[in-house]
Image 1 (cartoon, rainbow, N blue to C red):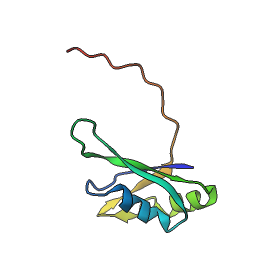
Image 2: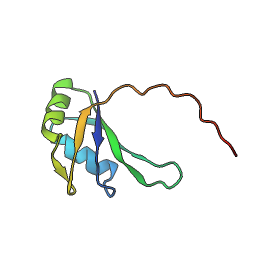
Image 3: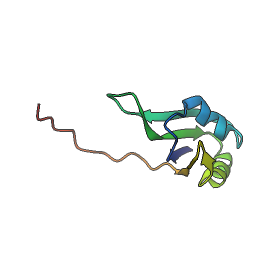
Image 4: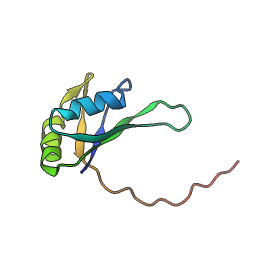
Length: 90
């Protein structure tokens, strides 16, 4: 199951995110989404856990919890919506 994690502190790393969720089960992958141009965190990321029961337990426990002084928003990730191609005016 893929889990959306929002309201992350700017300083958190992929490993920090993985460590936080590994308390609830096996984490296959954890990634922070960063801005293409600046490389700076966008403040959200995704965690993939293979066991749905462990993932649901992690969602329940981590949603609203404090990480780095911020209350996390945690839920099951929704599929990415198809967006039309970007138009460039350059």
